[in-house]
Image 1 (cartoon, rainbow over the protein chains, first blue to last red):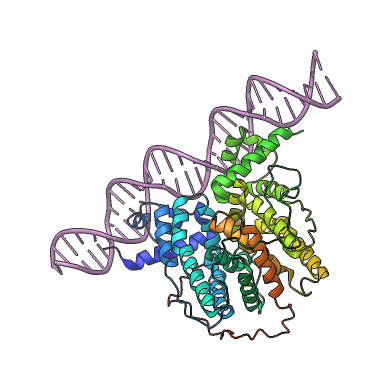
Image 2: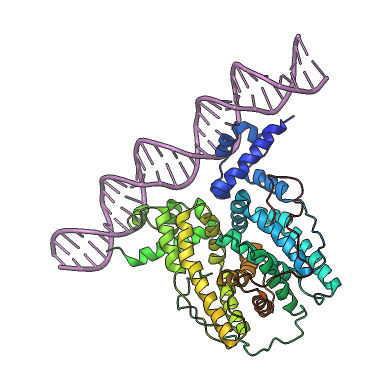
Length: 218
Length: 218
DNA sequence: CTACGTCGGGACGCAACCGTACCGTCGTCG
DNA sequence: CGACGACGGTACGGTTGCGTCCCGACGTAG
């Protein structure tokens, strides 16, 4: 007989607190304070910070979204990118997502939840999008959906969630065009065709600079 | 007359601790413990956790790297992507970089340092790479280097630092090919030419699902 | 060889949280 | 309308980290 309004208040407080200080510094006391709630009310609902965050995040992130068929790969991409851009520009999401992604690198439970709630979804979308394009004859079949998702999601995620650079007006259409072209150029996954163009690079990796324990370059 | 060996031990400990618990949870005591050092030795060198991390990280991440001219855009991209992939697969870097990127969203000082140490560098590389390609006649001039960097760095960063999916053998060459194609398809930045292809999408954004405060989708 | 400064270690008071327990209050179900 | 249960609040002992200070040991520069 827990009161739902209070559960909701706690959930909202967790999201705000996550955005403000990140998962690592999130404290139950701060959540209770922000929600105007006793710690008791929180412990009555979840047994730990991890469980609480997992439940709340997966509930928020867990629905699938319909992707309309615009009739062209480029149009589909543009729609998808706009949805992504909208989500990644939301002030809460743009703080919480990168934070949890980083935390997932050290916490298997978080990694699993995000994998389930976000990336599985993306993968489905990627497959759907590729399938349509193949049906239309816009792409050859056989491309790896994972690689496609990297190509689609990566640039926008980098721009908005990592570099945090503002988006110019025509950015999304241009990016959609570039991605569409890129998708068309991925060799089919069986790695059959050579890639021996003029600039084939010898595998002796270029010098890193001489320091061995300083790989912090992006 | 601070002993350099000890400074180095502290630096290494900070990196390991950063990777293990993240910036948010990083504590001076833990660093001292891990380095086998008194807290005194740390406070003698830096006045705060933030200052310490900034100094150490920017020193590690701050050098520029030479990018050999392979003779083709695709070859240059492949070299660059290999360097990136190597860096992002380093166990310390792959934990620390996303963590600091997320932290940068809340801490302007960290954001500034990363901007300076990493992204400025990337931007230069992007400009160099684009410039060469334009000189070779592989690309039209006028592309926005920021967008190019997004396209180059985004997918690999997403793959390695966010999704954390292993890299298949031929991934890098395929990605290089896709990016090269994508770069060729970006409309020049003055937004002159129309992008009115078949699938132009109307700007009424597609339905998000009906919930207003749940933007946690990626 | 002496003297100075850094070393690791330990102790300090203070603050924040942890997770639990116990209040008296209030709303709601039966 | 009575009883049950969730509520906010407070307090608890315990843990962790802060930033500072002092110690005796060591090593290096002069």
